[in-house]
Length: 192
Image (cartoon, rainbow, N blue to C red; front, side, top):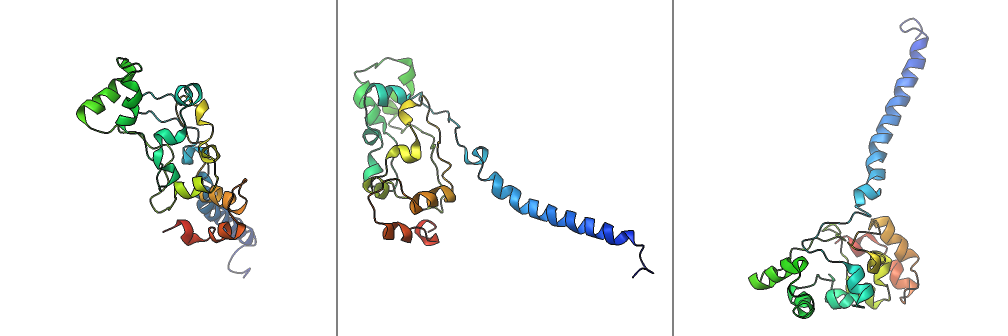
């Protein structure tokens, strides 16, 4: 309609329409990309814990196995956190007066558990069972990294849906059949 609008209005309309399309696409894609960044997944972020627990000393130097403190990992959904009794089992005799262990002694005296902060925390709608993975041959380091080299534990893996599906589609040396793993790539396997 050249009589109603000038010729340049077609170019202006195309520019506005293109800009609106790019803006709408960016508004959709930006949060999706952001949620996969280490900033959003809290990767490499060491949390401050109520007790200054150094995994390097306990795991690498003293040779304490993961399952000693995280006893539920072999058979239960949650690996569990060490109880005060587990800590005091050794620290009644090893460094019993250390100032670093004051929160542990207080926890034992008050019969109140230590309020550990979870480093590897999945959303509540995600079903994950540690026991199934440990029994299937997945090493702790696959998801948790080299904890024996960490002063304070931090999340190594992003623990995103893509990351989990990658492992289920191409497991690194897991002793499970490909049929069983293929069935576990459906939505209802984890979203319950």
